[in-house]
Amino acid sequence: MMIRLHRSPSSSMARLIGQPDLCSVSNWTSRENQLHNRSSRATEQLVALCKWLEMRMTKLIAGTTISLDGFTADAKGSPAALYADFAELQQSEAMQHAYRTTGAVIMGRRSFDMAEDPDSYAEDYEFRTPLIIVTAKPPAKHPKEGNGVSIIFATSGVADAVRQAKQAAGDRDVTCVGGGMLIQSLLRESLVDELQIDIAPVILGSGLRLFENVDQRKLKLTSATSLAGGRTSLVYEPL
Amino acid sequence: MMIRLHRSPSSSMARLIGQPDLCSVSNWTSRENQLHNRSSRATEQLVALCKWLEMRMTKLIAGTTISLDGFTADAKGSPAALYADFAELQQSEAMQHAYRTTGAVIMGRRSFDMAEDPDSYAEDYEFRTPLIIVTAKPPAKHPKEGNGVSIIFATSGVADAVRQAKQAAGDRDVTCVGGGMLIQSLLRESLVDELQIDIAPVILGSGLRLFENVDQRKLKLTSATSLAGGRTSLVYEPL
Image (cartoon, rainbow over the protein chains, first blue to last red):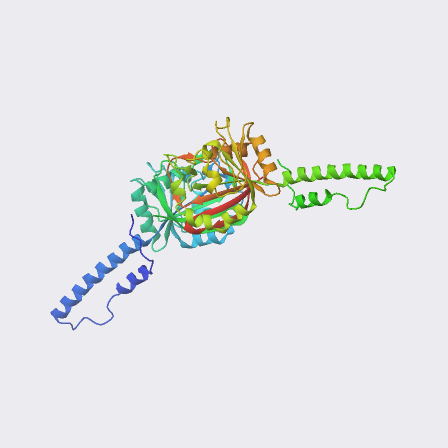
């Protein structure tokens, strides 16, 4: 389990205590220099501690939309039936909040490959943040980056990908946009701090299930909101 | 699809137009008698029509609780993990409303047999209404009835069981309390007017899934409510 702390502006704090001394040092005694050096080392350690705390405080939010019967896509692999309200959803306060508070996005390779052209992420992806792609092997040609979007292929497993994403996110959150298999891995490894499940008003009958191969887990409901188009947004904290 | 009509106090209307004539008939002419008889036949037909409309207006509400991953019971068949909030739930306005508006309960045989003693329904079942049990074969000994609880074993399929339940419910609703297989049959045969799905704040990982062998179906969300204990109550109308 992760250590959960109340969030504080730790990066600002780090900047503050990392400031160079403003007084002149030219006429210091060696004793004063010694004290100054010791205090500098303490400051460096404090900055490192703050960065570590910041990483621990960055939340990993795993979010996706499922049908009432738990599918993320229909039998043909298409999630279209779950996003009849796509245009409204993009404009919703919930999505706008996610765009504002996300510092890095983590996604599975299959989800990444759903874009016809991988260079399009730099052009029009809705999150303008580093994207961490969990994969066994990066593509031969590194996709285009820019406009706030950088792309990291994380090839050393899920926990390492999350570490990289948290480092990239600074004092904002990491959002996992899917797919289902990545969310399952994150749940199995207890790396999810917040589970945001939207339930679309449809029964699909068959398709790809979000929850497969996961263990029993109690959850704490932190919010339940009805959105336009009959979508219900449920936010849980795994206990 | 069922014909959906706005509900009206049709049983009161039926009683009203079925009232015997209050005036004396001893000194009527044969023409007057003829007219009276014709009007009586029309009244009888109206009463029958009202009863038929009343049956069409009685809603079938299928309700149950699932885990976030869609199970109605764990791998051992126990629903206990979904009802950590059982005591609060019984007192909730949602349940009290269900008790007030339910005129008959329909349930599968396996759900009925979950009571250790079938005679206990007459003693302490929370719905004091006729219970219609969908089964292939009634038990050898008919269970005890009383305190508003009567028990009908419906052996001619789901559609006929629903017809019997609606007849028994009068102008109130029929509530299907499960199990999952019965709800699936009702959905497949488009007999559900309202789907009430409570989502308990837990991932079970394995067990009995509510939605298996059902077809793709669009739904209209009519309400979403957070209840105590992290339960979310979603009400849909199948489209």
